[in-house]
Image (cartoon, rainbow, N blue to C red; front, top):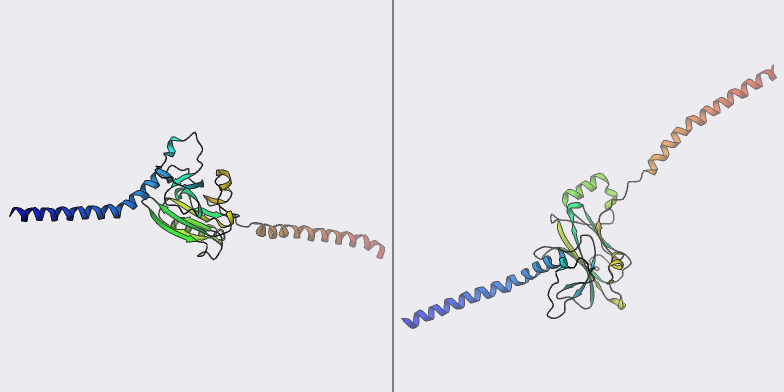
Length: 241
């Protein structure tokens, strides 16, 4: 009986150890991504693109909150492909839609939108976008409804991403083709990769103003013509008599 109870105890222990091991394997990646979000994305200033570099062996996430006096140069992240250069930008939809695009960059690229907990809610790349550069508007359903009601022309040529997630970040990867990569300088990166609040295109008003001006001018020309005709008639009557 003692041997049997010991055998049962060992089986129960192995079973519990297996459950714990499986739980660690399933939740460790999610927890690490959440730690990366809290350590990297949240301390970043919204709407400012920041270059990313691969973490060195044994390196831990830096507390960016303690480096207020030191400008951020490159944010460390794990598991980066050395064939790509990376940039990250945090944004907040509470202030309105966010416009994500690039300027002057050619080559293969990928783009991923994610939030806390490692939730990736949108991804695309150069092939999916038919070779065109990214031109994405991230917005909530209520915000895009307001845009369509006020000025639908401002949404032309934009890829709409509707989400209820208000606080998120974008990770942009650019392939180092022919030694071309994203700038590591903060100021230069802002001129290549844009992650900024959306600015609506103003509705054209010139076409509506011009007809109003011509309508006002026509009566003036007609009255002048009538006055000239009357003066010519009065001057010609004495001569005919």
